[in-house]
Image 1 (cartoon, rainbow, N blue to C red):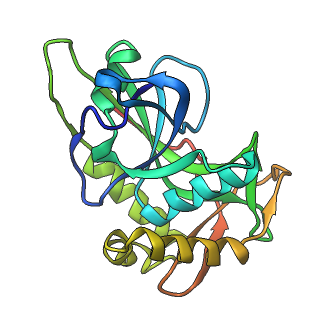
Image 2: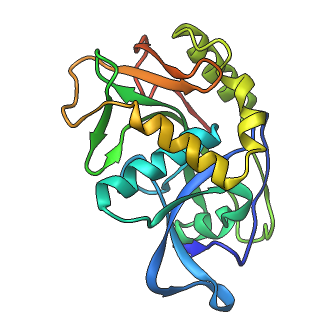
Length: 224
């Protein structure tokens, strides 16, 4: 766990980055700030998590689907700047594998896959390490990762997906909530994990999910 409000994260990235967190009941971070838990793509393992979304809309949809599955509203989407990534990395022993999420797993019919109470995501890992002598590191998200991700979007025909990011980032919370609700109404779900990997992104510029069969495994790239 880390504090949502006691620290911030500086980073380099071509896109604004987002995380999904939930507050821990009865827990408190530094200076009385609420302690939070970040969403992760997989549990266990040294340095595991958190999920970092390149799309604010995707992060919002992820939080909404997790809240729907849990029957509450504990999960929320926040900017990476507002999450204490350094403190979280410290709690893991000085190393963290950030899982950079850029799409959702789906079946052949386009239904999003829900597994263990959470939507399954397509991601690549970026590993960060820092010694105890580094108080306020700036996290540099590898440009190669975004080149790979952009090529993946082009491969499934999501040509303009990234073009929507700036407009979505500028949306107020009420407008984003309305958009998220409208998207989820038209989004089919499945709890059956397909034998063949498909994945999709929601492009608000065209108002629909765009997806295709995966051409490479979901964990195709790990950058250190």
